Length: 207
Length: 207
DNA sequence: CGGCAGTTTGAAAGATTTCAACATTTGTGG
DNA sequence: CCACAAATGTTGAAATCTTTCAAACTGCCG
Image (tube, rainbow over all chains, first blue to last red; front, side, top):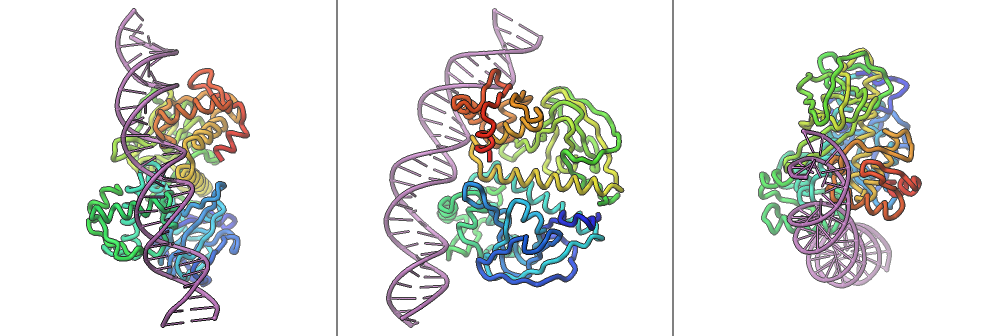
């Protein structure tokens, strides 16, 4: 699949298998913000290490976090920009910026399909899951993405970040963590360290 | 942009500007169901007239309607199939099925970008809108899509369908219609006929 | 006419948010 | 290294919103 030269901003991706050409290195300190207009459209970002969040402001003053990005993840800056979004460093992070290769149709196909899948899953999550189910799914997702399926996950993001990602209040996130501990599903030796005690139950709850 | 011959199920679209080659005609009676496996992957569906709904079943027994389709709208059958979905006729409907043209990259680009935009908008809607805001946005959307922006919209779908589309209960949909009538925002001469009395307010509420 | 699917309304239950208070952690400057 | 301020995390109680359950109403079709 070709990305047309004159319209390369259509490139969108997250965690694609296709390799990108080497690109421009960039570093962000904790909390630092990258606005896509810093770079024109047609650029993709690949995380080298650290954790980023993709934030979108809302008219009511709240924000929505549509993605967390970890080492190896990629996203098209055009998609971030499309809803007035920005990329912020949750932890100190290093990344590289790449121009879309207009000749690599494999790459573009991959990019689009991964993004469609991610968004479709989010629609189902937001539509039909309650707070407990969202949080269970979130813990499983994080264990797979940043702990390689291990049962101990160190979450780099705050409760506020989790809340904005799941579209809940931070208090609700907190209460549901507490409830899961009470139910023996997880342990929280520290607020950012989640030990999964019953993965199968968590997976079932998170559907 | 090319659709690769061996992987044509990547075709996805809704209301693209690119023309499709003439295809196979199909008709559905009210309530009749089309399952994508009826046709293999790599097919797109274009609505000729009538209204369709794209339904996805959930593990808890409820369903989610991810799209309503009207004359001129298109969707890739692969995307419908991807989450065990089906296409059902809300009204008697006629449609044509088309094989993706592997040489038409313009078409595929269009397909993907329209779908990404639709899904992104849905994520925002489900994440941050309450029932009243969802319904306001729905009425505006329907007025634009099936009434060409007119202030009188005849809704072809039931309150249950609207509820499953907005991820609300049918009673909540109903109560919010009633409330909007009480507030003078709309009139309901019949339950399926919505007259928009204050479009600007509706647009503001639905954001 | 009766039945039936769809719509509407009421009342109670349930879930989540909001507001408030307090605890804990983190970061910074003395 | 400590003290302090700011940010983050937790818990409680009340308010709000939505769902659920129940009942009644409507219009349409056989």
